[in-house]
Image (cartoon, rainbow, N blue to C red; front, side, top):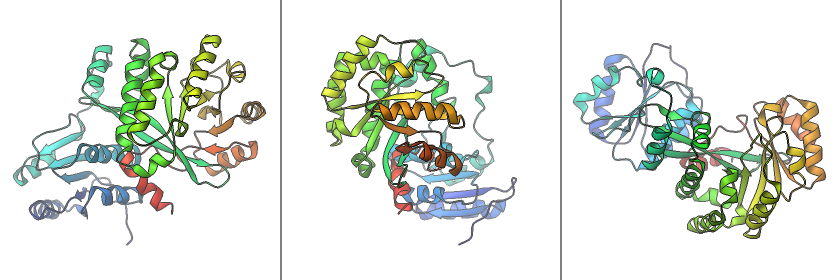
Length: 371
């Protein structure tokens, strides 16, 4: 079937679910408004549909009840993959999800819901405060996305990187740049990392195929130095049947030179437990990357912003390979950049050319579409 993008002023609806009452109501509403309508019986089919170049939907309407991870998966796909302002309505529910998911209790309220403006703009809100971040973390608003990492040689999927998103009730879905610096500044990075790790394990439980892959986690130095963090990480691995060897820990970059003696002891402790450790974002933002190559890391990730700097990229890759490290190039958005990285000898590639970060539930669908 050929699909198309409607005019900017034309409403396009995607109904998720197979309830006959809601199906009739949505069809009636679509006909009255001259709206395009697609119907997918299950959340999984809707997520798979979003990987295609379908019509740009102005509204996704999901029939309740949905499991929380299904609602999160739909919201995540709309935020990460579809890349247009799409309203998510939860039909048959009177419980909303703040600024991201709006409830519609009965068919009589459908017309009003379709007429409301897009999400309340957060522009008038004050900057995110440390207390607001703490409350959001306490309320369980942190969610994870997983960006595929592929072999540079074969393009086979070899792992995923877990990336945090904050589903804020008033501000919508916030990406790391909006809250991680505040977490560091307000000394909440350990709490955030612990929650992110636990969320990663919980969400991967809904994508068991992914548990056979390498999973990369970002860990700030204070957490890496924490003696109890290793034991807790091992316990979480056991929950989903993973071994520490399947976890790659990326040491979150810091422009300040760390205590190398303390870092070396911490690396030894994590590696003795079976975890692998990577230098993250090697490049100008990490001026001491050369010194870090003297420590017993397993891997190095190139800063995605230097993909166009052939000289610096070549220098870092050459030094990392001489140190025996596995090298990942991130920020790969086009084939020309991928070819340059292959030419330098990197081992793995990560970026929008292959996939945007995905909700865990969408990962098996992405894997199936790749064959």
